[in-house]
Image (cartoon, rainbow, N blue to C red; front, side, top):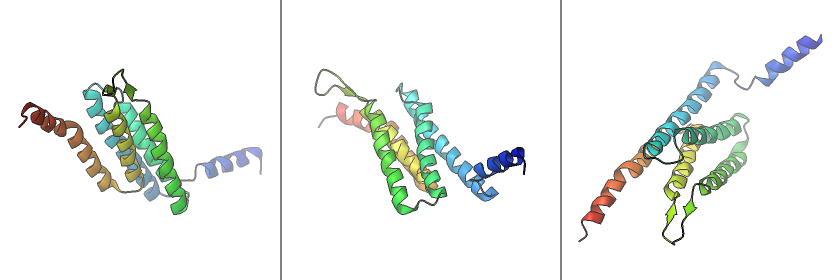
Length: 162
């Protein structure tokens, strides 16, 4: 066996993680759905002038899905998956903390909703990565309700004190 055959065999073995068409479609579907759901949430945030917009939410959601998918594909087991999810939660918590700005006064805090939204977007990505697509879509719809509809109810309550 010459050097080129060794190189070719090595390349083939290194890119053999998607073993069949079904698995490739499943991985592609999950990553694309995570990107789509993250994009929907990011679009909502960007439309309201928030710093964490479409690209951030797409990357967070897709990244969370990819971490979970990777652990699942190497058959890491429940303990490994638990550690992966814990790492995502902690890491995104750290990322979200960077979006929070405290002003001079006690009640002058900005970015909490953005931080919570990025954190929840990661949770959506984890669900997609685990194959819980319906749960991820439902969670996305609930987030959109919280971010878009709920503020109108709160405004009405503030304008009509009893």
